[in-house]
Image 1 (cartoon, each protein chain N blue to C red):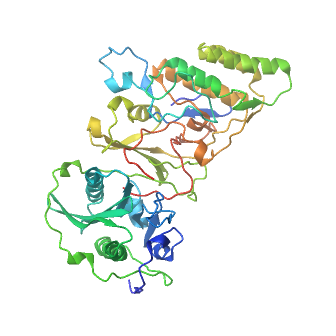
Image 2 (cartoon, helix red, strand yellow):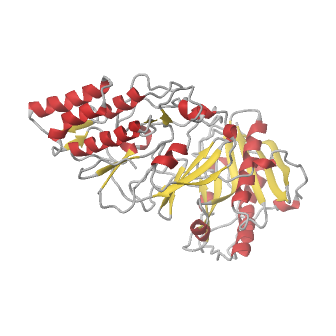
Image 3 (cartoon, rainbow over the protein chains, first blue to last red):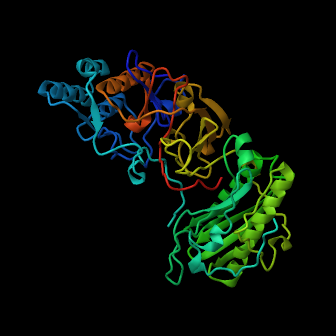
Length: 148
Length: 353
């Protein structure tokens, strides 16, 4: 279970369908499929509730930096707005994202965000549930049938 | 089963969702057996008509079975649309679906009969499947006939009869009370399909019998923030998720794998696994409770980052971090609330097995 400690709400990460293990490809102790995971051919790179790393594309291999970039994408200006007019707050919010986009460790971004913890945020252009045609985020490998 | 009326066969152009002929077979009474037709795709007819749906599946919604069975509805008639002129592959797929149906509900399918329908560019191919012992029996009822032909019209008439027939089998075998609403119309065919005895065409692929569910979602189901996908279903407080790679050419490394879900989603269990890497079929389940995907404060963002940090500490790369894959919940919730939103569609009932 992946929950933050001490937060008002706990975050549970779900949907590990595409998840893999960041172990050397030569590590025979891990099933081959879990150490050579790739994004599926239909992987949707354009989503409204996050951002994808530019190398997170169909048939490309998973990487930790893609996760980090996606974490930054959770509070990208196109995805999430900080409800504050304080320029210092806005700068810290942006810096935390930029750190993740550059592949910095999550703890550095958390350090930047912690002073802002109680500030409110609002989704930008998405809500729950996402419209049907905008929520095909992961994209299963297509079935080989040609539907009209 | 007394409200059976003779009606005219509807013209192919009228085969739309709104067609009374289709709606007429939708029977639903609480606690009863019910049928519904599921629209899948549009297919132009030769005359330029475009029915809003021609790839149907007839599902039998048996609420009692739903409570007892691990995954939802029981399909009896399976239709597939394709533009591939090689129908052999489609027929194999339908055959596998039939086998799976019987394998999954052996106690409820005392008469193992299933219809497979392939719609292919104005033409239809229909087979009936049955199982006797270890053998799968298959008989061709229609072979590549025009869907506007009298032969197909006759078959179309017969579908309702098949539905009735299978319902009776199910009712007699599991003591579920079938109620036909007064306003419903069930068409009786001119020639019953059972007049064509099922000949023996043994399936060499019978070993693929397994369990599956392929779901489309019902938007009006009880859990409002669950996005139902083609592989996910929520039932009895649990989320059932299917990983079905049979009849699909997907390398193992490109498939979705349930292993890490089982490890990292609390209380997740493996319901079924056929252990065939190239044609894998797995079903997992995990508890469902309400939650929220939308962050309210920066604290929610921090919570996600910490959760991902914990995953990375375990050498796990998630690969699909987005708000819809995050569930924010109150810390006092008794059970974690895993959900799935892979390819949600909100408007349609799910369909064939």
